[in-house]
Length: 248
Image (spheres, helix red, strand yellow):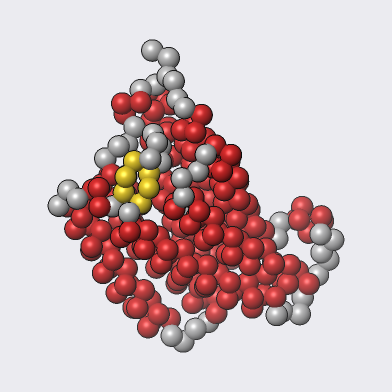
């Protein structure tokens, strides 16, 4: 049987796979940086960065399953499973991200900050897991196409909390880089600030609005650009140094 998918479904699934692949690659590159110099923030942010984009995991996984099996019947349609794939580990990824942030800013309030994030995360995730255990899957999300879904208020609030926590902490690091004397650090700050300003906006539009094929392409290309600018802001690879004529 020939698999027949709607163009919108193909775009959503394909871009989900691209986002997961590229962000995971960036995360691995950051982890390799940690292996070379043992700087803890690279370890924490490498893991955390991969997890930031975990809401795309179920869509990407469902798309690959359907493409490989050539059967739409195997797509992930159970909303508890769809949400649970990324909600359950999200607290770990958020804590990794915050640990990296506190390492970067050398904050003396690291333990207090992590404690507050942990309490909020456990409270929210306990509520979401309660919905899953009791089978109230429709209170969490509703399938919107074959490889996408619309999140209900509890999940949306959790997503917003993660997005803005990551964005604010990332901006603080980016702004600090802008204040540095070296031109290379200032340019890194510009790239990081772009990433952390645009990322939550794109995420809110992607998760909160019903998009057509053009909208999906634009928003997810913008999301991918955030991964690229984050990578440049963290590492400033040689080709970008040459392109921007950075010598210091």
